[in-house]
Figure (tube, rainbow, N blue to C red):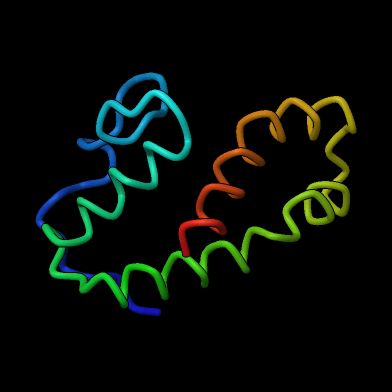
Length: 93
């Protein structure tokens, strides 16, 4: 999938804590992403399609981490951040 010509850079839209557009929780981050989609000339339908694509690509992240010999401790630590965000994207898509 080709990247859109979004006038915003992802890094400029994320706070130091890894939050999107100042959101305090993963569901709020999804709302921020959907709001940003319009600024990037994405229709709501296309934004949701991309979210489904990304969610599908990330669904096997734990297995990929294990294949790359990441420790279970590190996988659990990463999961604390990845899982709620992934669930929010899946739910919103």
